[in-house]
Image 1 (cartoon, rainbow, N blue to C red):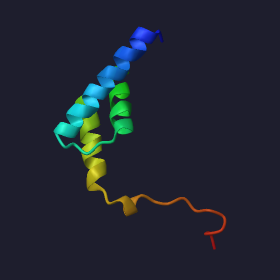
Image 2: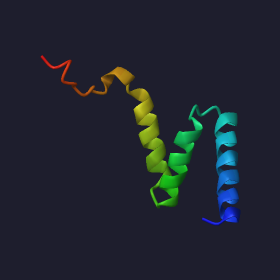
Image 3: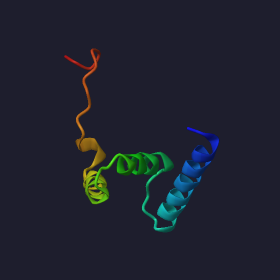
Length: 73
């Protein structure tokens, strides 16, 4: 990526992250970056928003933890 395109991409991400903070969406910069990249790849933004909302409803502890050799009995 040329320096100008890289700078433009960085500024776009900064602006998007700033807007998400103003709207108090609660997404970190990395998550915003991933969501923007997925949209750039053609994924439906409404579908991504629905996934984010659903994941927020799920309690963190509901995700199964992989067993490690020391924890398997």
